[in-house]
Image (tube, rainbow, N blue to C red):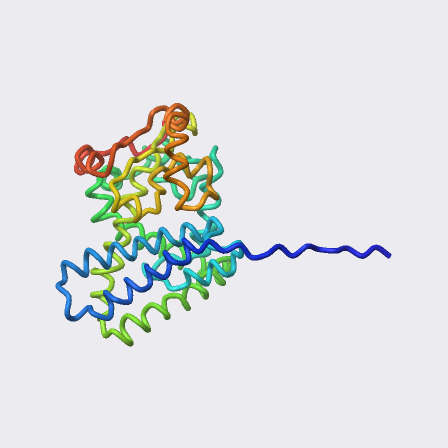
Amino acid sequence: MIIKSYQILPLRIEWQTVLLGVLIYVLFGFVTWNYHSLPSWLVFTVGGYVVAWHGSLRHEAVHLHPTSSAHINELFVLPSLDLYLPFRLYKQNHTVHHIDVNLTYPEQDPESFYLFHRNWETLPQWRKKGYWVFHTLAGRLFLYPFWMISCFLKDEAQRFIRGDQRNLSAWLWHFFGVMLTLSWVSGVCGIPFLEYLFLFAFPGTSLTLLRSFAEHRSHPEFEGRTAILEAEFLFGILYLYNNYHALHHYYPDLAWYKLSAKFLQERKFLLLHNHGYLIRGYRELVSNYLLKPKEIPYFM
């Protein structure tokens, strides 16, 4: 009789990320608790920032931070501050996104913003104009959240209507996360639901889309599809240095607090391999693409 022995590895905990999460929840609690005494512009600014910051924390959780336990990490980011995106679906799609040859490729990368040219040619003119608008920074920040979320929810509803229940557990967990958030926001702090949507969830989603707007481009070689963006400090910490996006794709499991030092070591290598896809800050991004499409929205 052969007896197999299994080694139980100790739980790895990154206290830097734990403390970051505590800071995010404390800041969210402060803004929501004091909501009725703060000016709307300040709530919009800080509330949106903290919701997007929590989104960056969720990204860390996908990549096994702050602990080596996926279950603990999921619980750590369970409150859904943006309200619309189930963590498990995000994790599922983002894992596929990290398959290098799929990057930005239509119908293979679930985080792609592009279409095949053959599909582009079948679209009515109003849809084509919409895609061009969404490839401007203004369109991506102010209009695309409504289109993106409505299409996502419609697709998920149609999935359930067809009897496809593969995402059911993800939505059940998401329901608990939304209830946690709204119990605090509306039940305790007395913030009306629509005001939370437009002063917290909407600007938070827009700030997240600001990051993704510059992460990738259409390029014949997958190494050239991922950007390096040398962000200003407030944006760098907001995105947990994921703006060094080519670095993240080379080292997807490297914790956020190690990325800046690693980038200084690898900068020359990264820019050589990503074909010089460099953006020198979000000011440059706004200046170049606020009203101008960053590129064509389809693959040839």
